[in-house]
Length: 361
Image (cartoon, rainbow, N blue to C red; front, side, top):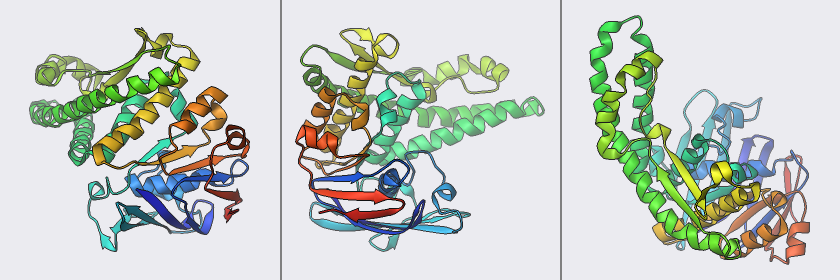
């Protein structure tokens, strides 16, 4: 799997842009705030329909324009694909694959698999549960279309149920309709729990060996899925928490409160780990993510590294660079020193300056 080229029009600080990529390592370097991350974001949008920053479409489109366009050309097992993304300020985005419009985002997932690694991901272990749930959701949505449907439906029902819990203060007669929402919540919630459990179990097998190697065979890392409620107990747990839900006017039970735990030599590093341990675990998590995608789709994903090297010490830089030499990688950085010092092979270099990108080889 590789990205051959990308075209942008009216996208953030780019009026127009065309880039052709190498199958190996591609470096985008330049000063901060020049638009390097915007290129990675556009690739991520084409893979998932969403910005990794959580930005809305209208925030991506240039200020004085109504529309923005992305065209991504990829090759997957020697078969070419073209993804056209048409972003609009006041309407839903339009997406086409090989010129054929698609109706659902799930039809796009899996055509191109990407792993995005940014400095913020280094804090994945020490941040709150929402960050870890987001990590699981973003990857699972690329790998499992059933999960996409179940997660969307579950989140919709939680939102509707919470609205009803607030409205009951004015319309108490609607309380009997909670049973209908609860039935649907359990149905889709069980599917979410099942998919997450399977995903973490598979990730666990891969990450242990990777972390053992990265830590110099000094640390044993184990990850666990911590469901807020077990699948078989969800219905009863929801009934038990109803009165508390009514008092607090929100849904207090379900997979929207799940978490992951990370144990190094038996110690929970979310709370008791050093920053170095937390960052090493985050690095292991990303490398394991690459290997898991390979196992699931029988092809390596594309790796997007957004200025991560500057946040890692030399040892972790070496571990990361050594672990991605077989993956098409697009890296942003402010300079080339990290790669020169590590003697890392570079296949293509781009200089980014104020919304323009020039190839230097």
